[in-house]
Image 1 (cartoon, one colour):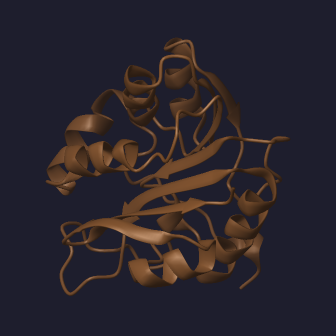
Image 2: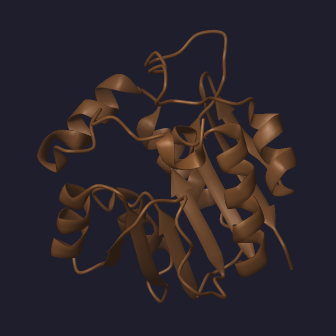
Image 3: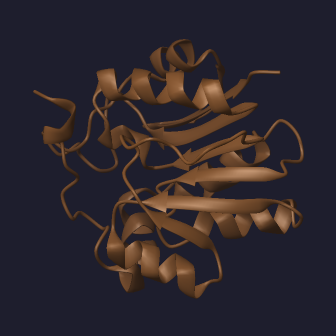
Length: 187
């Protein structure tokens, strides 16, 4: 399958008004994952690139902790881009498979987004991130014995957190059931 043939089904991504309610119902550990991702940021970032910005929930938490950070977000959903722009966040309509906006970035952050990429696409993304960023924090659904939300074939490509850490040159810093946070620092 060519890289461009993988697409994200609508799942929660076309309804920003109900996204938080639905994602919290699907992942009881959603807020804990968000907190763990923000806690994993290795230093106060200046320039941040958020992949799969969605409704801006992660960005809001990031800016509460690091109010001087300048965030640029990417999302493939026009509805989510519009919603994040309403919050005053700089957002671009783009896929993670597309070339990244020019760095350097202090931090590349992605929460519940990268699991939509195949293993090959993840490795390619991590290679591109490493070339432009000082650090990466990834919070996502991972392969586990049981899942809060069953992976959707052809849409959700789950890896073990240890594989993600190896591919991005980082470490697993938090896990809970089928959720994990991986952090890599490239300084």
